[in-house]
Image (cartoon, rainbow over all chains, first blue to last red; front, side, top):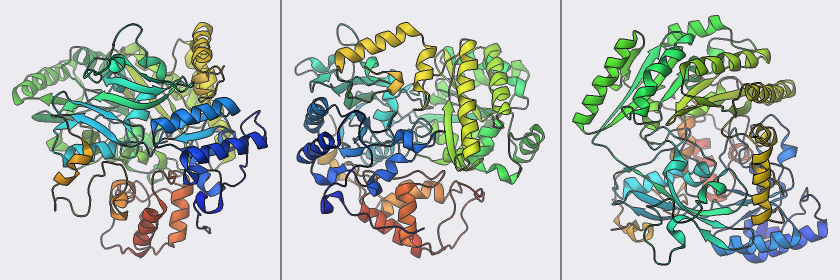
Length: 527
Length: 110
């Protein structure tokens, strides 16, 4: 493979774009590009193939041609974003805003449909404020978890983050507005979000919650403000460009006690849920704990080829061998306690008592686990530390294909058993693996399945696409729907939530963005 | 009291972690930092393939970083600028492998 030195766009002027936004003439688009250059400078307007390449790398089971951007523009200020909106409205150029562009398995950085202009906000990366007294932060879209973590550590501010796995290269704003989750007691990220600044399609700048009150100092401490609560409509949506976000951070506890519970049988998932749900709802286990299955655990630490060289679904006897030789359970619980020594001790006794009474499950403490993976990276996640260990999932079968199938589950044992059986059956029909974990919310669980496939094999990619479509429809028939989905399946998912929801989404879109310039197709929403 | 990043930059403790500091503005302070805080998290942990000691051509490394390769994500210029990437590519290309990386040889296709 040869590489060519990529010349900055500024040196040669913008290249003619390979594709155009739908319905926009080459002449009009060239005019828009010239205006973007006036606003942003030529070095922040990318149209050449080399500079666009990183934005076209997707993991979903569709051709990148369906998600190829017409250009990428990079803004640094709110004023620039406002001016961009004016150009887009005039020329009808659709833009796809990204924060850090690390939405792997959900579409990465690429737009929902080809021909949109990516508005990359990675350079808007100021940590505007961290208040160690109120335990809040205000950040721009390009701030990464790593950057925020470094800032807290270097300034000796004893606050913890909650991040998704893998965390280091993703950022809190993008993750939160896509309603991602983490693993600490603050793991439901949108619940811990407080105050937004949003550039609307007409160029107005909205501050949500208390943010509109002149001289307020409560923007990051009171979520609701007055009148209709608006933050929700700017998540998983395309009604505005979020340029600032407030969030709550967790005070570092005096004692942190991560632990694991190993269960030997697939069907134990029922009893796991029934045993642990009451402890989660009562707050005895405060964090978004996880129930990871054998393949998720194995994939985080090794490729499948270590035990199985075949193709198709990994046979059960291989999984049994992995369990025995690697010391992995059929289901592996990861949870943690946080607080003073006394608080942790009291809750620890309640948990160990409940496990003992249930008659199954082996508790593994941090001392017992030592430096072994996957315990070590799980312990990091549950205190919001940086790790990319879970990228290991992508090497399980290899080939760079991944789509998260993430149905919401009621935290009842019977429902987890039904969903697990159904998912395993459908994935098996398509020769794919059930690589799964449940992330436990306040009452729900996110049933997270990584639909992994070899994207370099067209036949397998096609199969993965068909499998995902069937997962959505079969789960949908039984009243189950995903909480978030990749760019290839946004319309099918929107349909599951019903025609009235789609109509209201569209009515809001027409009201706030009548020309449909912001991220058309996001969550199935268009004018 | 509220912390404001720029004003506090002067307070950074010197000599703490060798050659690695936070960047409140999100810009890499050097190739070392980018390597340690991004690349090394996979390529020194056995998640991604071992790169050290292979004399991989810098141009090849840069191509893979910019375009991605199977499971390897692509990194746009907003995430790592050309100068920093040049430094990372040179470092990896000239690196020696003294100690083997942690477990797990990668699968054929990553």
